[in-house]
Each structure stands twice: as C-alpha cells, then as structure tokens.
Length: 177
Image (cartoon, rainbow, N blue to C red; front, side, top):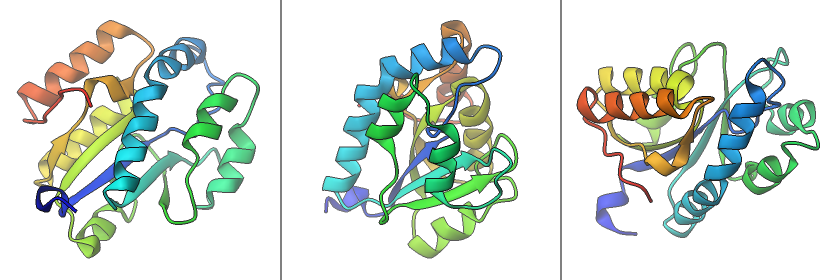
C-alpha cells in the first residue's frame, strides 16, 4: 500500500437510503449522478486495502446490521444504488442517531483503533450529514478529502455551498476522484 494511504479510511455516509421523504426524489436523482464515482471510490479503497466504514441512519431499527437496514430501505427506485454500494462482511457498519457520523457513535474510537487520521468522505446529503460529519472531523483534527464528485444534496446550490465550506473553513481537499 502507498505509504501516504496507510493512515486513511473511507467513510460512506447514508448510502443505504430509502429516499422516502420530502425532496427524496431530487436527492435520489443527484445520488444516481454520482454513483459511478462512489463505485470507483469503493473499488479504490478495496484495491488499496483501506478500511471502508459505512455510517447510516438507523430508520428506527437501532441495530447496526446492514442487511436489516438494506431490507428496510430497498425499493425499485434505489435498487441500483443499494446493489452497487452495499457493504461487504469485511466493511464496518455503524448507525447514527442524527446528522453527524461522529455524534453518539463509536466512529472516533474505531478510527483511533485503526490508526487512521485521514478520511475520504462520500455520501449524502452533502449539505446536511456530510457537512455535520466534516465539521466534527475537523474539530477532532482529522485530515479530510471530500471529493466533489462523491457527494450529493437535494439542491446543487446547497451542495456547492457545502463544498465551499469543506474547502475554505475545514481545509478539506475537494478535488474529484
């Protein structure tokens, strides 16, 4: 493995999603646009032996069991996303109670145990859950790469503003993968 990657983990936020909410149709369409890049990032992580960590909304299930979350979320509209991006048994899967992947989750402990201080973050929604996660990661001192072609929000303008904040305030690299 490239020595510059040995302290890196890949974090996918809220990829297992039912898109069953007001505005979900827009987020679904925008997520489908970034899907090829998400698949490329996942492939990159596998090829470079990077830990892949999924942190997902719990949908009232409250069990960190990706199959139960997938079974709950899976529908005709999102099946391409879920089929392409579902976690493997080698990946880590955590659930979160609110927007940030760090808030009341074991993510920081897991990253510490894995010896990772650099995060490549991807997922949805860029202007909500990725933004809150990036804010916490920045406050905890993590270095971040948030590829602009690997996040989606309901509105493109909101996504662009989140990217601006990632780069200007949180010092994240936002170049595409």
